[in-house]
Length: 159
Length: 178
Image (tube, rainbow over all chains, first blue to last red):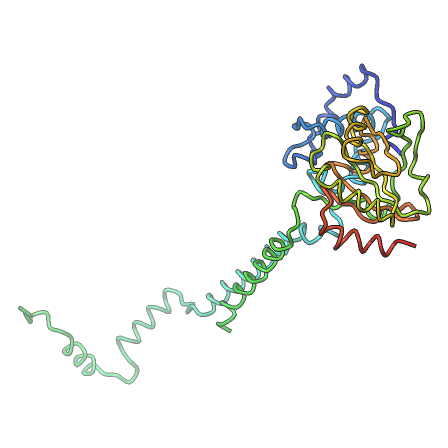
């Protein structure tokens, strides 16, 4: 078992503690008793033990991936602040993309349908229609005169 | 077709509501982390016994037996709460009960056992908590059920309760017992 690794010497531990690599690793691992803190942030005793374990693993020459795997095998994916993609959490990872796809599809369909309902006329066509309304096919001057006569006369005073 | 505009959002809401309700009703503690160790061989260790420090003990000694590894400490208050239940399981004798004294002073641990009773077949002293690290211990007390092949079959975090014993641990122990 790898937890039987020897403790690094005080000098080695000091150097490792100051290393950028340790800082990065400790900030990507979760303290399990204070779940919203990283190993780097937490002052809990377990976090101290886990930091010590990380130091031992680093001193023994393990790379970051191996150290993370070591901890995941014991404490579960939960120790990782950035969980890996696997069969269990595939739904969670795919969720946003699936939702966006559904939303996009719904939006596309919705806007397209609205487009179809809207009459697509350009300025000339509208002019022509208005023109047609003014001179209905088969209509005559007299019919237009009737229409204009039926309009409320501007001369009439409602008061 | 128009009805879909109401049915779809209502259905989506219903599905979400059902999931949330199920979670809420399950009574599961979100702080409880499912152990990746279940179905894996119990990690080996060599540690001194609490009562005979010159003697070293390893889990291999119990190969062929179903046993319970109870992680406890004298500084751990909930350990006291579950102690009568652990004692009861040990007395029934269906499984061997082993204590792992986790990050504790030997003197305190012995005094605690003298006061509250020592139900354990053996008590192992893990002063540095290194075995605890290998077993993924993050909250004492924790209890592991290990089968005759040395595979961890169940893990309970926190004090054992009569409900857990009745619904989960008990049936598992019964199914594993020879």
